[in-house]
Image 1 (cartoon, rainbow, N blue to C red):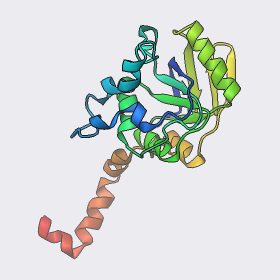
Image 2 (image 1 turned 60 degrees about the vertical axis):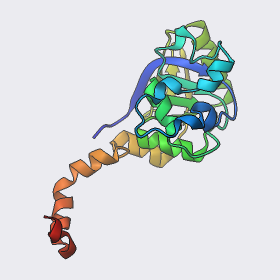
Image 3 (image 1 turned 45 degrees about the vertical axis):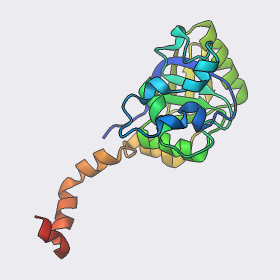
Length: 196
């Protein structure tokens, strides 16, 4: 099982409020059969309208910890939004608050989403802008974020934290780990015998 206790990486500052899933991945990219290639289209329309968008900035291209404002991931419940961020390279998101469905979709992908105060996210963004190579650590065991000499407490939903720490967020691994029990149950069901 893939336990996620800490995520470390450089940051991407995107301290805006109410970033909806259509801005994260525009609707025209939802027709894909797989999620492959979605990363290159993350924030595509925003990036075309604003050449200075952080996802265009070479300084942040290796960033894996996104720092955002309030209500991140609001709008439609498209799973493509967290998929595109993950495939762009984002491994954790720190925001002031999250839309509930987006939050759940991130957990299902193993992308920790934690909330921090407005003061903390503003400070983190300023630190990232001053030093794009600054390493940020999101620690789910201690429930804190550390960057250089700065640290702050963070929060998340207890069930999400437990799933990430235990590895139970990864449903495919859970199924594979329990294959013998699943097979035993399938063998005991009369209507499953015709498929053997």
